[in-house]
Length: 219
Image (cartoon, rainbow, N blue to C red; front, top):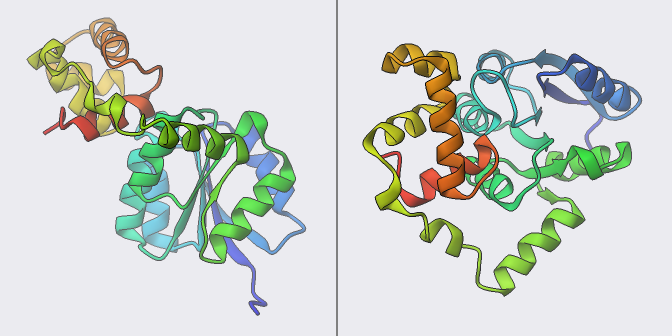
């Protein structure tokens, strides 16, 4: 039996959320050893601290949580990452798991008990999907739809410039950074982002990353 607490790194753009999770974990077997409000900071802290666990949001200001998960695990392979996010669509879940996350907990439908349970499952070498997320994924698997959406990405509708923008989005670049790199206005970059989401049938960055990577649009 483990007598020392599990060290946890909290990654969330909102301090209020980090404070809330810290309060939930205060009287448990989990010890918060660091906090980050961006994906880049999360990667640096994982490299420096090698925490047992990371609570990771997807919606981060610079490098998104999907990319940060993959990069953090490269720096600290023994760390286990639980996604705790405002996003809970199937594309976000699938992309998070493929990036190396061991669990997925949607913020809007989860309680403090769910968070503790998810962290315990992941800390003990298991995995965790909330009941609503696992039900939706099971429905897609049973209907044969799990790979269908990515396989139907309309490759011919993605222009060379849109591919450039998409590649940088998947790499975790902000609209401002993309604008500088491609010599575009931020408004133009936002327009490309909106158009890409419409073409790929997703509504967030995690969905874009999943569709792009699975369809090979970023290579």
